[in-house]
Image 1 (cartoon, rainbow, N blue to C red):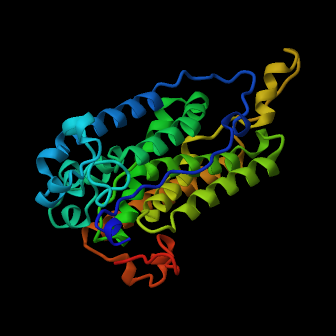
Image 2: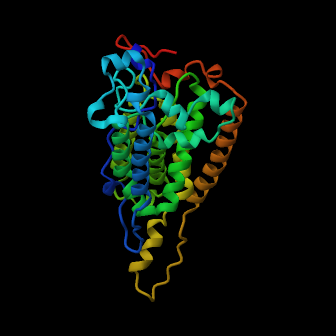
Image 3: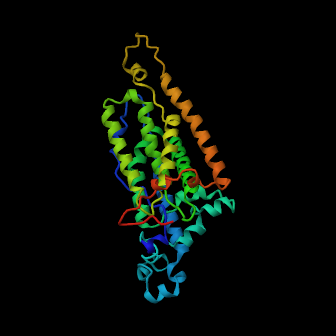
Length: 328
């Protein structure tokens, strides 16, 4: 763990997801979108990882001790794209210094050097091949079907804003380590799936099974975050942000309104498109989302350490056991 502690990055996002076609039933009269946002995000993340590895150039920048040991992984095959020594980065990726240079989330730089843009750029960087593949597979599994159902505008807003929300919460609790990865944005999509189920409750024929499946998936993925060197605060922040945004952006016409498509033309049907509870959830979620971002950003740029106000919250990101310690 001592070696891994020198290279502590957010590497979550791995886990299991429900079959998307079971979570989002397609109904007659609804448009199905052709997804392009998710494929573009995957392509951009892969391209940026290649750029990061090119800039990293392990053979040229490795320490003298590493050079003597020939520790750059796959140096003979990848040349300047070779990975850092496994003792520095077991995920097959660049150095911590390279990630910091190219936009990783670093509390000190965000607060004291006014580099707030890192809250956004960090979600497009990954710590290694393992990290990248796990997150992109997860994005494809849950993102494609969401985009087919709701379109690229709404899904892109949820993805990006949730990623920033995860970065904000991470910065409030973690000061001594860098954080990179799309996991906060991915958890935002999971949170949006849950709120979509609640706000569109009338369209599901097997509500209990859908809710149970989704809650189990969310619990498993959040549980992964209590392992050391995983930034679970980014997961939680992204999930909460996506959960609120789902009420705002993913409202669907209730079942009764959709039935007008199959009624005879001479039958009057005056049901409203959205039910009152859907509007209430949208209003409450809008207020909470705005307040949450305002308070979180205010605390962050004032340099507030959220650990001072919550003595037990650090256990949400890492639970020490006899097999590992969480470090500082």
